[in-house]
Amino acid sequence: MLRVPLVEVRAGAVDTTGELAADDPLLTEAGILLAAPLRVAGRLSSAGEGKYYWRAHFETAVSTECRRCLKAVEVPVSQPLAIVFTTPGEAAEDDGCYVFEDRAQALDLTLAVREELLLAIPGFVECRPDCRGLCPTCGADLNDGPCGCAPAADARWQALRALTHPEEKGD
Image (cartoon, rainbow, N blue to C red):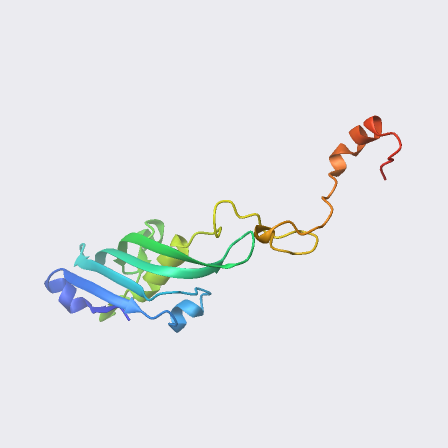
């Protein structure tokens, strides 16, 4: 866990380093499947009364599926962080800050890392740029070659087909 005692930060900036295991429950419960441990390094400093600024960087690899063929894909994720932590107040929510309790003795950076990781993971992953995907009829992987299914006729062209091929009538 990435927990930093606030008394240390009040005395001066603190270097933060940590690692979350690939099977950490905090990440797996959020639906994140890591292929490598999540490594975090940064510096936490005071930014005024009840505020702390954390400049950090994390990197890992995420296990996901290709959006076209559903094959397993590992995606490297590397992200710089610039986060402000603050005590509750009306400006805290508007500024996009992470809020922590007034009486907290330590600042837990883990939840912020999890949220930032969720935002950094690409939404659509492809195993390769020219992935052909799966056949919509039989489900065969088209990257392995054609499946043998007849090509689907596009209903938008039926009227034109009826003009050029009168022997074939559309539905």
